[in-house]
Length: 161
Image (cartoon, rainbow, N blue to C red; front, side):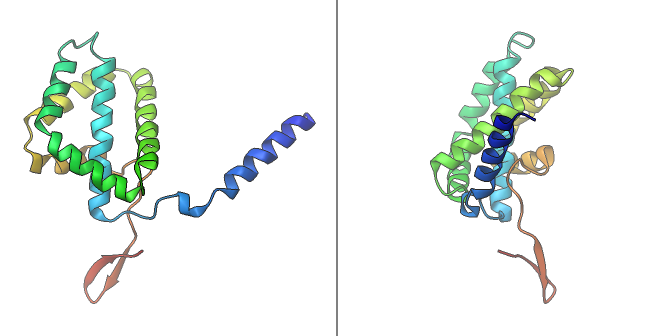
């Protein structure tokens, strides 16, 4: 291996290892996990609406209807996640990571648009109270947000921080 490559690898590894643990968010409580699931589904559908408009021309209009219908819910969702990520900058980095990952899936998943269209159709019809439950069911474990481990205490289960 070329000496420059060795030095570059060592520098990158050192920088990655030196990143403060405080920069990573703590484990998430159930409200934060639900918020992350909804936000991930939100960006999944945004990417679909932008990328699938050639195959399914009505997707951008359906996306707009969904955003208008659930604007207040999405605003509250963003507040929960900004608090979890400890600020707008970290929240924005998370959103960018989720969106970038989804943008890759557009090209790597056969039938991507046909898979996303019925999900968006469903989201437009849901009430705000149904939105989080549907996101939980659809997303499962959200990207980069990990639930706190559960600890049994006197028959009750509590998150451990």
